[in-house]
Length: 542
Ligand code: AMP
Image (cartoon, rainbow, N blue to C red; front, side, top):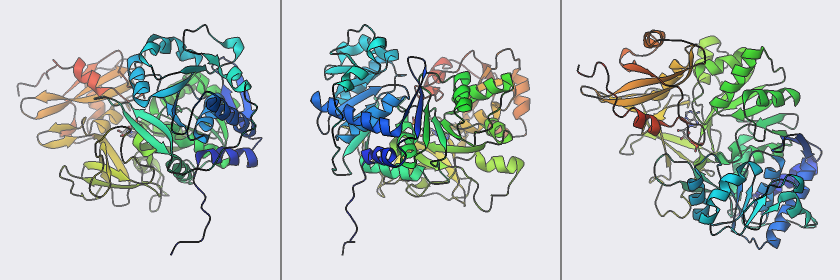
């Protein structure tokens, strides 16, 4: 027997309709690419998103066609998202930090028909435009006054483009399983893989993100997503914030500590979300200028492990920290660390111990750890295993790739190695390809990195496994010092000594001027392994 409730498909565009209707005057504030702060609201965003839909249809975009965006977090980008998805086309967010040839590869693979691009990226796109034959038109996200000279095909400024539409348009209902958005994973090996979100998965993910123990913003909050719309679905914030009527502050192209601080301060931001490198820049700027953020209540941090020293800095400022783990294939939220019973009253170091884990999943994500043969491992907080996940907002396949990515129970292998404790708190110890195998045991490179960045002179640290004649692999700690600071190999090893098992201690420390990063801000270990490929440990003869 079927239930007798209404058949109401979960569609992304209904979110912005809701925001326009019930929170129409709620502000969306942007540091524009042109420079000035621009203020609009949900009613305006909705009205202009309808014009985007009309303009796309006028240009021949149909249900299922792909439209790319190469853009910063701005109000125009948000309008484009909803305008594209509202007509059943697919919003393909392209990460502009990738190499131009990778961008061309991705756009070809997706067969994008229109590319909506910020002025910042026009010169880069021009260089590879002749390699992207599927693209029929470029919409440049600016107005006529700021329109650059460009060789891009059929280029038109966004404002002129939508001005040709009157906005007298209505979005329709369609199957909630229709594809809404796509995002390619920036794999460090092999070709990028296209993750294809559906309307249903995005809406369910937004509801998950809205839980009190997840992002949990309300209509009285102000959220600043530093995490870009092109990085893993902007952690769902472009859906979750409007669905709650939360004020949005979009940082545009300026993500340095001073610019982010200025927006957090002047817009009285209560919630913000981004990767650890962003918070490092913010904290350095605040410390150097003796600044405070009295309105800030919550910092959500994910994408890479949040160092303990960083968690402590925010906690000491009276700001709640929410360490999150996830991935593009998961829409992306997987787990978040909050203090639940019996840990709610913990203080000091014990409190940090919990906040530093990657946390436990919201309803809608299931996880398990297994050995290489797929056998489930114990949740004892010690046993490392392959982390596998399932849920309605987790990928079951990649776009145009005919490989099975699920195990027999329908779980997706995240490529991460983790422990889970009896309370369900998960700790990432490594990417499976980064874990250091020493004498048959595993050493977590992430734990060592977290510890090393706690040294006051260390700006960033990376640990890689280097071949060792006796132990197979041993950890090499690679350190970038803070500007103007000094520390020797011995200083750093002494700082780490006693805080980890003896056999986990790095065998050597190498100092570098800069640590390479991927397009999503993660440490690029392949480049470091390459850089240190002829390195051998001083004790290697042992
Ligand atoms: P992406 O799809 O680019 O968001 O990358 C996902 C990967 O980032 C995950 O599989 C993890 O390896 C890593 N990651 C994300 N969040 C965290 C975190 N909080 N701690 C450690 N690694 C993380």
